[in-house]
Length: 173
Image (cartoon, rainbow, N blue to C red; front, side, top):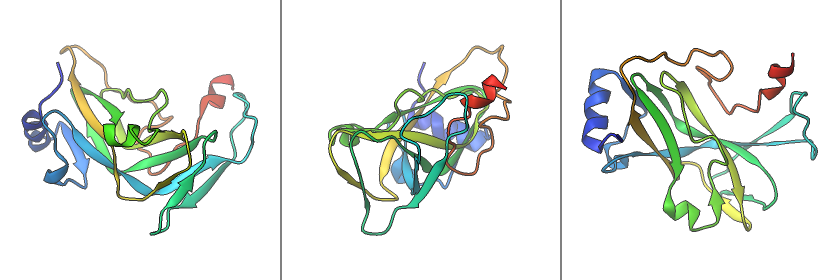
């Protein structure tokens, strides 16, 4: 079952869902809109190796926006920190963003119960697209989970403070 907007507010008051900063105007009937931070990252290498740590290049999104180019992977992050206990958080791009030919998450829209941190967004565009920090780029929604569950505790991405490049290379160590 997906939580309603009313239930998201109730669970936030109980401390089982945290979204910071919180703006009641971003609450929807069954989700909450998250915004793009002022940072975007891409990889320096044109060929990536799963066994090697990728070399990231961090860019700031200026007030006049930043044009993203097709055929290139960009990593962004939400401006909001989220924390979830007892529910499975998921993100999905907003339809208005999708109608511009912009993909907000390629495969990683599924979070783990217990995740705490900022969401890293895997962004691609179909044509050159100017993006701005603060835009409501995706929505978070929550699925109920059975009472018997473990919470996410991995140190790989938990409690992050910024954009997280792939750490798949650690699986080969």
